[in-house]
Amino acid sequence: MPTTSQMLADYPDILLQVIAELRGAFLDAAENRRQAIDLLTAQITDPTSVLMAYQELIDFQPQAQAALEALLTAGGELVEAQFSRDFGSIRQMGPAKLERETPWTHPQSVAELLYYYGFLGRGFKGAGQKAHTIVYIPTDVIPWLPKPASASEEDQLPVTPTPPSPASRMLTMDDAFLEDAGTLLGFLHTDTLRLTPQGPHPEDISRLVERLHSHGVASPQEQDVRLALLLHLAKRLGWLRRDEEDRVVLTGNRVRAFLEMDRAEQRFALWEAWRTSPEWNDLCRTPGLECTNTGVWQNDPRQTRAAVLDLLAQLQPGAWYSLSDVVQAIKEVAPDFQRPPGDYESWYIRDSSTQEFLKGFQQWDAVEGALLCFLCRGPLAWLAAMDLAEPSAGDDLLISLSRWGSRWLGQEAEQPREQPRRPLVVGEDFSVTLPPGTSLLDRFRVERFAQWQATYPQYRYQITQRGLSRAQAEGIPPQRVLQFLERRSQGVPAKVKAALARFGSKLRQA
Image (tube, rainbow, N blue to C red; front, side):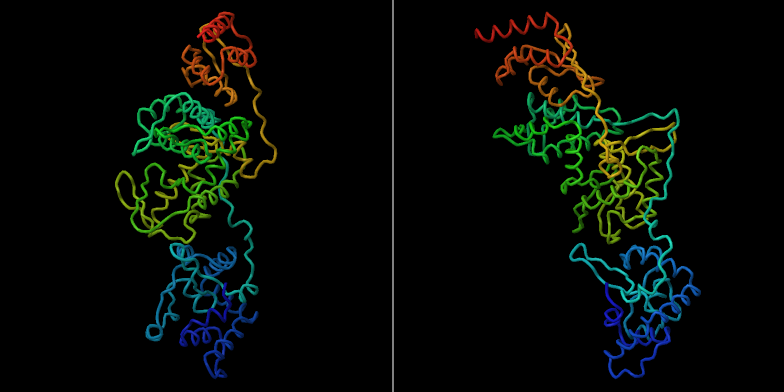
């Protein structure tokens, strides 16, 4: 930040005279402009002068204290758009207009009052689209101002827990998204996903969607976004490639490495892929919002995610909070979490139902509020970082940091315990049922020799001759299938053993 001397260097002579008059400084001994600036700087940065002017300011306008404290809490500077929302703006005038209108005699805001007393300067930061105006306290004035009494608590979210009622319906996602990642891998290994100029073939996507978890997802639009996120993370993790026939196929080494991870590592891999992705734009995926290509604006999804996660890390692990209370608290403490320059005019975002452009801070709830709600009930819940609860009709959705979310956000050092592995169930009807928590690697192995039948409430597959032939073509004979089932289940019915043996003999004879 600039010093007082650097701040004054750009001021017209009349403004130097105004500050000197208001602060009781004398410039008569100055022989030139440089000397005038040095002389004024020395007088108005004197500790006694600073404290006397400070007291005079807050006696005249008590809100001046809050303005200075806001700046001091932020390290001495703030984006001008942020500061102006609470403390007003500074009218920009040239020397002639200053002399004609004498705005220092009737300042129209706290910001102007501080400006004409030499406590507040204006400057610029950033370049290109990120260029923005800041306001600051000169660095040689800051040490002599009283420190804010509660500076350490300024950024804390003012929100208290709200226990769910007994009638609340828990919407915990658990590992549904992780399970769907396993489903995607199995589907691509045994089925077809063709690519067209418009994207994945709708018929192939329909067959994939049949196998995915859909319970707990609020709307068809959110289901579409959830599927898009699943495909994006699969691509980002290097699982997918396009073959010469324009089909999506698996990248063997990357897929095997993921499947051989333990469940905690797999969850974290998906979480990190989302958290660090520069291509996945949560704002432009928020239901009800439509980002347009008009203008040259561009948001930074990684910066936004980092800011939101830092704020949510303040929530007490395991406690339940009203989602609307959390959104309102963020609006009070960090409204510019995704727009550090405080620019609410140049982003072109429409309401998808009315096609109205949502501009200005007055549209914060429609844009920032909608994004926060979507992040909590969407990606954060899907990736197992957030649990949800739906109270009785008319009440707000409740959110709670899950055990995994708490760990990833630095709240808990100890890793949560996994449920013990339970055996597969092989039926007389050649079905294979996988209990919750079955490893993705084991399910992928089942996918290689059996046909998918159901996903919810448990995965269920059917051993078929077609599936066994496919496995044989991949170097997995029926004998190895039987050995796998015997290791992973409580027992394989004699009927199934005999059928696998007969089919193995038939294949060998062929």
